[in-house]
Length: 142
Image (cartoon, rainbow, N blue to C red; front, side, top):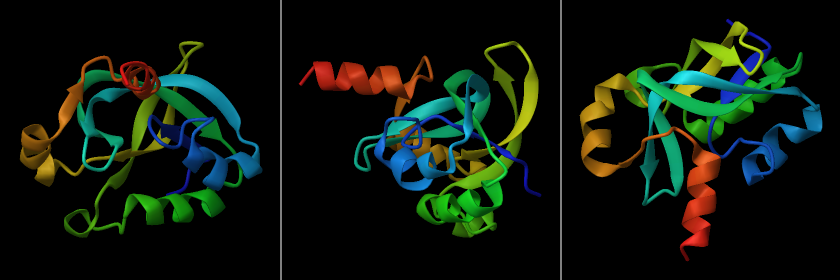
């Protein structure tokens, strides 16, 4: 099922390289948004992932009719195959709350539940679920 909405929280955020590479040219409408989950930083890979949970993930939602063109490209970089055991990340449709308070459905990439234990043992939790803030603090501490 394709929706025109995609919630992102990491390397696809506006201003970052993957946004410029895969999304910017399609000129999506961008909404500040949040979703439920727990964010982890993968130090060896240098990017965040989200595991389903009750925390808050800060990000943005893209809305564009070009989503059927964009998603297959992003599926490839996220190593999403449609089969959890063969995917690095999975893509699910989740509730996303826009800054206006409206709740909408959007595609969201998540860490597979079957690999949750590995993530808890090998990654760092980002308690506030804010990748942009985490990146700024990481750069400031260098």
